[in-house]
Image 1 (tube, rainbow, N blue to C red):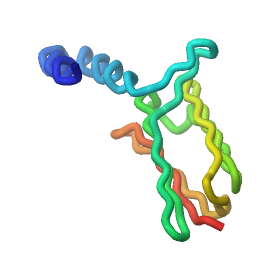
Image 2: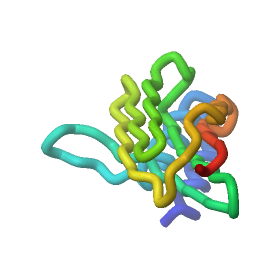
Image 3: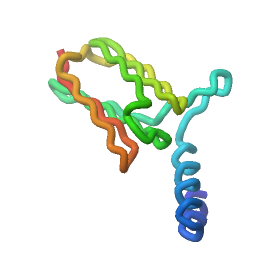
Length: 116
């Protein structure tokens, strides 16, 4: 199925390609129909003393639409586009060391920091 979709993207105009890409990227999202929210795909990795969280936000254009709250035990992310992500850390984190970056080109948010 994705091969067919990519073929359609390459045949359309630039605006059609952008629309098709957005449709393709949102297929990986889990939708909650009761609340009309989307849980973005994400990965968390831990090392001996640090962690890294990567979140795919294909519909987000700017960090200004993202609300991110992180404590030593928990993270909550929400956007005006309808994404919501809540997770508990496996290990306590040092919230004073958090660094967050959003890459507009890849639509990926990266959060990293040290563990306690």
